[in-house]
Length: 259
Figure 1 (cartoon, rainbow, N blue to C red):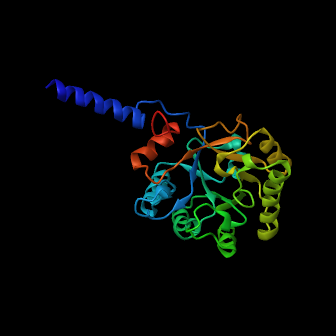
Figure 2: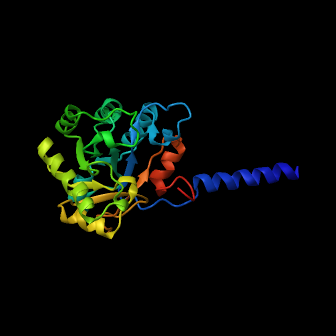
Figure 3: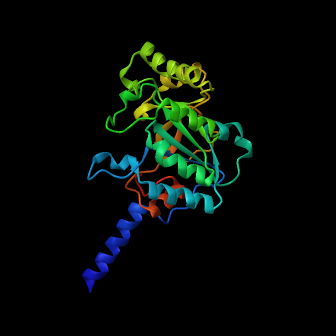
């Protein structure tokens, strides 16, 4: 009997640590910025499945947001209307520019009339997951023309900014914006740091290049009215998250005590 009670206590402790269910929600007037990479089926036991949210799970997540009154915005749209954002605002972002963002995620976003910001690497041959198809230019044009998708920049070559000198950083950041604007005839206003790596110099370059914001991989929920707009945290939505974890991340920004 003692072992049963002890096992139950251990199980409750593990569940509380893993899922943080008891924690109070972060103020719902602060928008939730969700970070995705790929929307596609998992590949065996591949270590990058954490970046792959299945289409079924992605639709379940978007349907939940839609049915529970979440309002959808792009990053720049939210910042331009920051004083008028309704409670329960959500900003969906994708990093890198994988083709499944168009083939799998976009039809679901259209179905529920939800918006997203895609942070595009200009030279998509440099992306780390070389086996994954990349967005084509025609895909990007269709995404832009839908009125649902904002295109942000993610450097020319998915560069690790920590390993570059000043001139190399400036080229990767500034030319990524210029190339997107010239290629797709749009204004590129938001930036995402590759690998989540950046420092104060990088932030200054992003600002000087004419971006209005930059997102990070730091986990959290920020008040866009007062946070550093060149260091905006996001909520990482993982391919191994179950639906309960997704709901908890909307509530607190984290699945559990650690992430």
